[in-house]
Image (cartoon, rainbow, N blue to C red; front, top):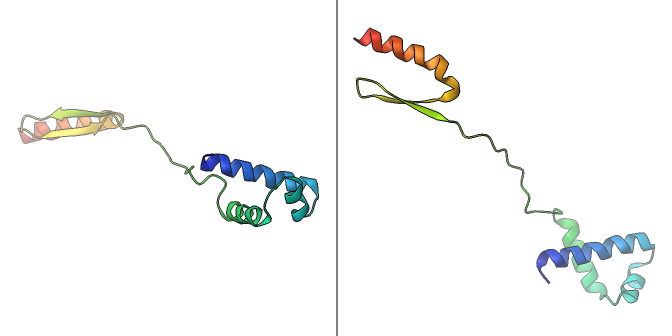
Length: 98
């Protein structure tokens, strides 16, 4: 049994035990479970997050860049979304340098 299957197995027993309204020793007896093992897994699952493998992550779209090579040999990389704003500035600066 994988660790995930083991967790699911014990989580199912804890849920069934709580719904049964039986005392823990009686539930263990009816399901052939050892009380110390039952207590171990009950404590272990209670103290750990239900799914520790899931971590929220923000994923943004990668920025598309466009390269601009100036006559002076300088190369600029500008995000496509900023091209309309950057291009007039680059043109004006290039004209002033000449």
